[in-house]
Figure 1 (spheres, rainbow, N blue to C red):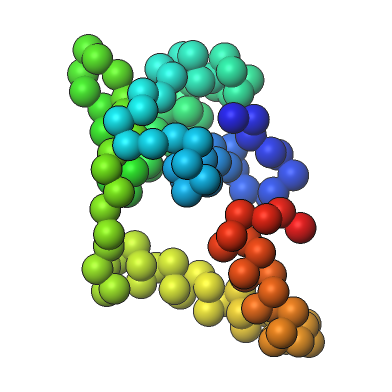
Figure 2 (figure 1 turned 135 degrees about the vertical axis):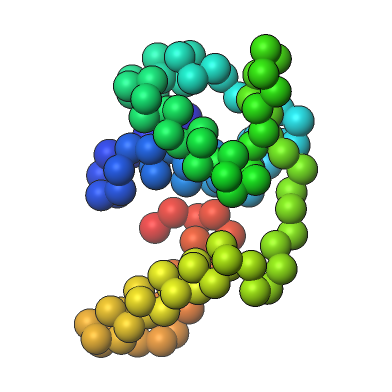
Length: 124
């Protein structure tokens, strides 16, 4: 689960995104156990505090759950309501990106192709 430092995101956000990508791709499934904070830090060559921050964010987003003394597990998929705080915040981020993309003059059909490819898990 190698963190990609080229994305420009902080390392903990990269790890959060990577875990979510692996869930979407079916690599991680509900009930799967994640490595401990120390083990993940060792695997990813990150500071344990960075991994801990990522795990806390994933837990707050209800992506994972920690059972004290047993480990950290992928939760069952939660279908968020269309107006949940996380959905609203993500929509605002998308609108900001789309404004920037329009400003740069990228044609709509190209943006749609990017979105489709990203949504289907194809990296460009």
